[in-house]
Amino acid sequence: MSGGRKRGSVWWRGVFWGGLALVLALPAHADIYRWVDDDGTVHYSNTPQPEASQRERRVFDSRGLMREIIPAPPTAEEREQARAEQERAQQELEAARQARADQAARERQLRQAYENLDEIEELRARRVAAIGGDIARSEAQEITLLRERERIRRQYESSESASARARFEVQLEDLEARIDRERAYRRGQEDRLAAIQQRLDLDREDYQRLVGNGEG
Image (cartoon, rainbow, N blue to C red):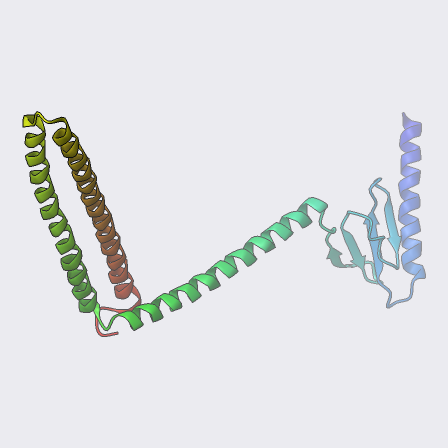
C-alpha cells in the first residue's frame, strides 16, 4: 500500500516539475494552456488543447497566473437545444410581425368601411329590417299554404271519386314541398342574420379598440 502511495507521489511530482519546467522554458510573452483530458491526465502546452476535447481550458500567463477560462464546447444535446430555442424565438418574432401587420390591415379596413360607430349600428338596423321583412313574408306565405293544404285535405277526405282523390294527393304533395321550402328559406335567413349580427359585433369591438369611439 505504501509502495502505491509512493509511486503516486512520484507521478504527481513529475507532473508538477514537468509543468513548471515548461513554464520556465517558454518566452515571457507566451500563454500557457492547461487542460485535463477525458482520461484525467493533466496537460500543459503553449498551444490550445485539441478541439476534440470536451473539457474546459485554462490559460495562464508567463508568471503562472490564470488569465482566462475557456469553457468546454457545447455537447450535441446542448447544440440541439440551442438550435430549437433559436427557431422558437424566430417563430415568435415572425408571429408578432404578422400580428402587427394583420392589425394594421384590419384598422385600414374598418376606416374604409365606416366613418364612425353610428354607421355600424345604422347598417345593422338596415340588415335586420330587410332580412326580418323576408322572414315575415315567408311566415305569411306558409300560413297561406297551410290553409290551402287543410282545404285540399278536406276535399280529399270527402271525395268518393278515385280520379279526384288522386288529383288531390298530387296537390297535397306539392303543398307539403312548398311548405318545407318556406321553412328551409326562413332557417337560412335566420342563419344569415345571425352571421351578420356576429360580424357587426366584431366590427364594433375592433373599431372601438383600433380606431376609437370618435370619428375615423
